[in-house]
Image 1: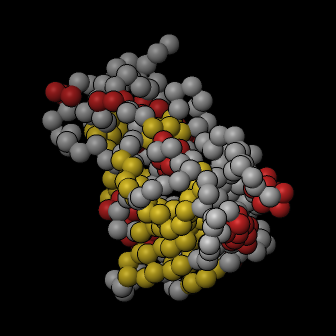
Image 2 (image 1 turned 180 degrees about the vertical axis):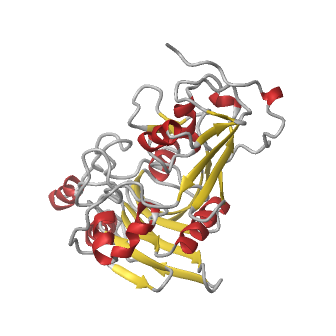
Length: 352
């Protein structure tokens, strides 16, 4: 049986006009998450709407909060099957403690910086950041718990943002609750800066901005897509180098949606090279050598690397910047692209 519709907007006078989800400190050991339901979610089940409003939390966790009475729509506790109408105020009281038990594992981590408040990891491609369905072991979170057992006290072991499994590069991790809340707020305020290097298919003539909302693909639900009903997403890019049929771009993010760079670049007509979901079929430039062709065929992931990270330190207030060089596979790809370009440049000198 379908759930009942929740109250009309006119019956929720305390509903704020903003649509972004926010968090605020409550009693000791608690955080209150709050949001105003946008009209685009009208008609959705409450648990579905919350999954959109609070994408950092799994559907399972959201349903657990609903069952335990931690979710309120206006003054009343909500039910998962209730339908939202839009403009309601929703509040979730979250206990700031690790809600799931993860095992520590002795997995090598490249920790490039560490102090009492935070640490920075240079993640290799192939390493999943957070456990999930089918990936309860062998993740960066498991490795972090081995590196610092005290991280069990923090939600997600202090992880505040993610990289896809096959994206390499820099991630910041909180070591204290104060630092975690501060970094989460920096992400919301868009003051935590992230820059990526990516090899894309096609020749980008100039840089630009992609300002296009991202949501679930209407048909393929495991994929993301530019969707007018999605969440705001903004990516800026500039050209670092152009080759015969590919470009090296530097991309900076204002937002951090799932697969954002991969979706935005494909939307702009420059899919990330090697992307198995959004990249399309491999295309080899004409007159390519056997060696160059082999390099292109042998690259087995999206060519995307988180190369620069800047945060305001939670304790000192100073801006801290870290950089990461291209990993071996991407560096070899760029080297091969450069060699192919040189091999096909017109010869200089006299003609005739």
